Length: 261
Image 1 (cartoon, rainbow, N blue to C red):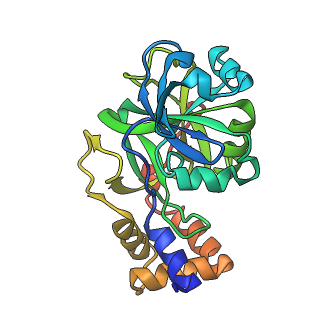
Image 2 (spheres, rainbow, N blue to C red; image 1 turned 30 degrees about the horizontal axis):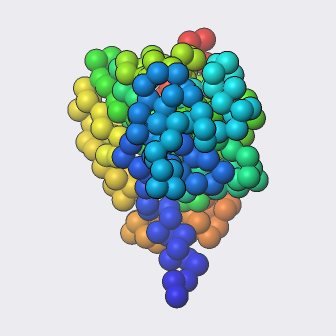
């Protein structure tokens, strides 16, 4: 049996968490592969329960109607929001009625880096970063109005992250809603996220261990990564203090909104 502390350490260090390599639909707590995104939403093909079926036959009329009417928000997932495990955690109260389409997209003039923050579960999260000439291969979640509000709350929108418009170059034809992404207001560490291929930036690339190591160095601490993470997941007050201190480093990487704030 694995003790709770070790499980929390493993969870923190596994960010941005496992996800399928192709598009999928997160439906009532289960994830089914999308095998084709040709045509209208109803015509998309899904491999579910050993059967290949039309998305229109899998969703409820209300869920499909929202997509076909454009009543959804297309939000890039540059961190854990495309991981089924994270979606299950964030939408735990709605696992009997949730349908989220998750698709891969390419975003020009941006990269994905680690934010200069610490998540409540101990991970160093990710953020989209403007980088002229760069490209980032990420994911996008297509969220209903209810699910968009839930996702915004989990991202501390307006306090830690805010929405920025993006223009993917390869979204499926059926997806016509404008895209946005969460960008960390305090900026980022100069470290690209290895799970999301980015080009056009000279920063090194790394995983969660390298991000934690950079955070430790930025905070001028003398701690091994595992002890640093365990302290953060076991002591919320200490983690919050470290999170605030980390958010003040690398001011040159701070995100600037269109209004300059």
